[in-house]
Image (cartoon, rainbow, N blue to C red; front, side, top):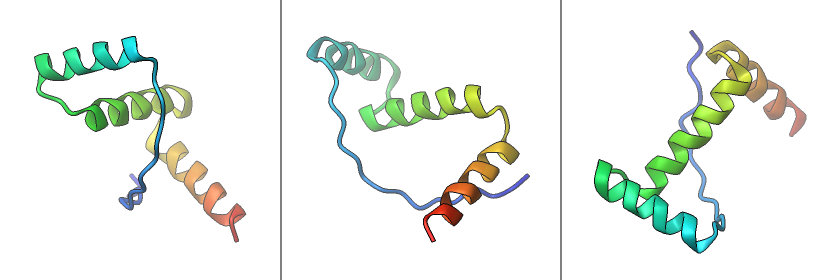
Length: 68
């Protein structure tokens, strides 16, 4: 299984107020942070689209090589 990079970057996103309220309620009830929930949600979404770690690695390599 390939090791995926661990480097992080900060991004700013906007959600409707009602979604932030729901997110905050979920975080309080389950002991998460907003960042943790959003990160897990994005990973889950991408995982459902890319299917496995080898595919993630392929996408990362493709994107990384395109930037050169």
